[in-house]
Image (cartoon, rainbow, N blue to C red):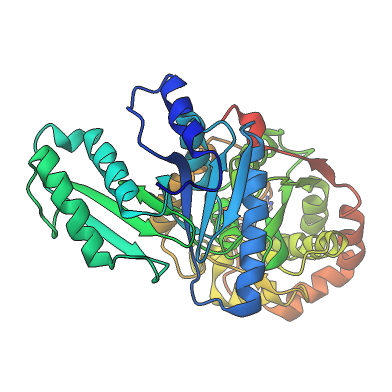
Length: 424
Ligand code: ATP
Ligand code: MG
């Protein structure tokens, strides 16, 4: 049997040595990653793959597991130095949070010959829970190296026959209980039975950098997640009502960013005490325009901050019509406040959809904790739903809002909420 290019004989040994109760499979356990955005070609594809490899290494750092990352054609292989199943499992789970990966498989890397594929397949069926109840099985072989000595259907038949002989299981190609995937690659063969869906999207950082306006609410964390998933690395900016509110909203923003940090690492949260500015807006007689005027000042401040951080866009959790500040006319008035583009990935989503997504990324429970949102203090009884840009500019002229934004941007407090610190 031809040898793999890296210590395959050790892998079986260490799998046996580990505490894992699964019986070893002939080969080496590894994580096989299927990549997204298959439309990317040429240079873009290279940038995608290089960025993804770096992000994979960064994501695994916190686990304290030494890995090797190998780029194959259209897939990435992650090996652990230890070859322990528990390490491979931990790396596989971590990979489901790395943007740009569509499927995560815990696979066995075996030598590139049909016999090795047969053996690994038999081993995998042997440890499958559906074996005991005589579940139906299917073999799905495919080749990324077409020069392999057998076609995919020949492999299917060969392995299928052996599995049937050994375990006397029925074949069901439509709805199998056990599916064995066999993928013939350039240097090796991968065999696996299961997979976890990946996060999809583009590797974080591939699309540049932007600044998220992060309240303690439900929407802005989802907006941040969506844009990270499109390849943006994001910084976070939170406006607290301090000194007129307590610090609760800051704790929430901190906890939210720590949760979102698992998708990018190295996250920064900047906090601006906004209470006095809100008071000034109120004193200027903003009245029904108070909320939109506040939001414009937040955006202006964010623009200054983004400029200092090298951010090329602002991101908010606005959803059309959800609250009174989010009518079409008010959103138009918000766009007018800054030159930077404002990205609103939730603009066409229902609250129910947004909440479901927030639950999925584990931010919902944090967002639902009570706090005193800076926007709810000093809120007028009736808020304007059709803010006129000229009126807002008048207010801002009286206040010298440009100067206020510059000043507020100097009062930032920086935090580094890290997913690694959350005990995860
Ligand atoms: P969220 O659930 O994100 O708070 P919301 O439905 O409560 O959104 P608004 O309070 O009008 O709606 O806020 C709309 C957007 O404005 C937020 O998604 C966020 O991007 C930004 N924003 C609002 N308040 C703050 C804040 N205190 N600090 C930073 N950004 C804020
Ligand atoms: Mg809010």
